[in-house]
Image (cartoon, rainbow, N blue to C red; front, side, top):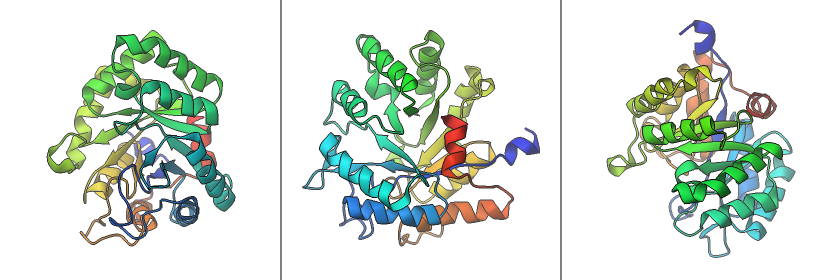
Length: 281
């Protein structure tokens, strides 16, 4: 792989809270709209180009309700303007069905949304509704990030793309490293089966951007490996709260700096939100 590829600009996304963790896990985990806004501002300063947004109900449990998303979106936009790509999660967490996940995105028409292929297309019966939704996202300029959990998901994504169910362009993918490993402890080697399947399906020649997220204290190592292989990374309290030295991060910004600063020292350049929009939008 040529040096120009290895030194491609990279995007860091922050996943600051997730669906399940609370202030009991970390005092600086953002839950309320005001906390999310403050976190967004800190993460812009720490090098993030995108925020992956989860919101909660009044009891701090996971929500995909429009009424819970709207104040959080407004607060983040007020805090950072367009300095972050704002990506909504559609994660079901065993609570929501595909029709509800789809309805939320259609109602809010966000800038970007992440969608797990195995959640939205669990079987062939779900394919017509999912394909219609994927086509709608493409037409409405809602940038999709298709979440893939293993090599078989990569092959499923390739088949959906090949059939036209997932339209070409205006999307990217996320490889989730170690989601089904013992104790959800990711390592850089977990990326290899994804990239092998990516090559097997010819997707490495298709110009599709990819990123990784990882669990546990090797999160920064996984992120750096992805960047050095031409990808991007999503990091944050959703999956990990440990710094590379094993200490607890003070906030999400500390995790971003732990990835971005060493990469900068190696000559890699972090992307802005507008650069990321141009790349995947």
